[in-house]
Length: 418
Ligand code: AMP
Ligand code: GLY
View 1 (spheres, helix red, strand yellow):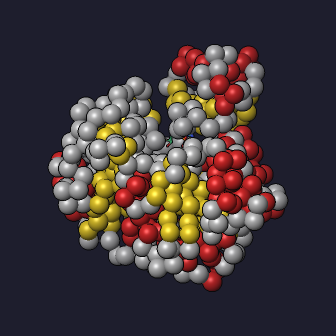
View 2: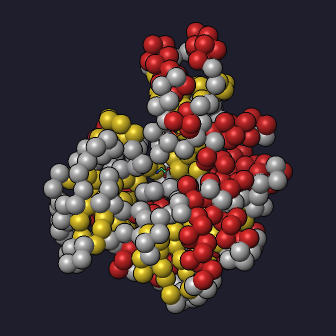
View 3: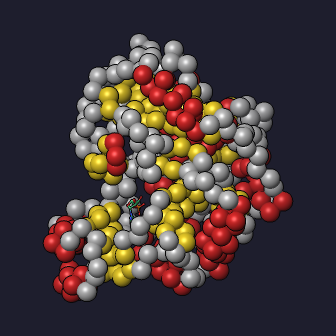
């Protein structure tokens, strides 16, 4: 099969790496890809959000499958347009990808179908939001409705901070149109957990759980980032715990979307908080989490192409996922200054000699064959072992053998709650 993957991060690198191992994949391309992806796939210089160009490229080059990994092209309807042109594609259509593209939509969906989540109210007017805040307990969470690269969430510890957050979103347009509508919601407390699930529109199979570390610095300090590292499993869940999450959150969400005429086919991401009153949804995403998937896919034993087919063809109810009996850890190496301001173009050394699997994110292959930094999150160093402690130690052994100017990584991945 001839396969095209859309995207350019660490997530797309692990997807390409896993597809490359499939006996059924003979030709692999990625648009636009990155320095690491170039070692497993042919990179094609088309932006992931250039929907028309991707559709044209995929039709004129006879691809058997296009795997759409990031949220932006999914929300823009890339899968819809590929399908309209007779091209098989992996990922939800735009009307289902909305669960990530609009927090207002997802909160209303959860309320309508009684899926446990934080209490909330919606506003597009500053004065009304201010009035509402007067009656709220602090801390309180303020969220922009639309896509904001994980940055549109503010946890305000008092009413002044809460009002400042409302004003920055609704008045100063800190997140542009993404913040024209806002969600004000109860601040939940508890460990966070990521559950990713494959869904065929009717039925979902959860993958092994994982835990992301979203803040930039150790001990969960600093700004929220896309994710600085992840471990699997994400919590010590019993079979009963998994059943509660499946029965109260995963399957009800898939059925809710189907009832709304928005069947979800692809990977659905459940950001959960394990509160004293049980697991509740923090957020949905319409795709694999990054860096969670870099910790998960290396443990999948199935041929990835078979899983993809089961999702697209609606066969998950009779499909079985199989996992290596190991724990895993990925540590993200980022450019100094990420997630705010950072330089690019620094040469990276040690990737091939560090002895660990390294998934590349913001990197570029130069004309003279060097790998240089080209983004905020640069690399993801992976290891697996029988115990989580050993997996974490192994990933850090790899990290210590890699270097580039101004590099920054957290030293407590897997050691704190996230
Ligand atoms: P989100 O983009 O919705 O995942 O939010 C980013 C991060 O903000 C989450 O990973 C949580 O750490 C935190 N967060 C979001 N919503 C809440 C909430 N209602 N209560 C407590 N923490 C939250
Ligand atoms: N790691 C969080 C995300 O992918 O949204």
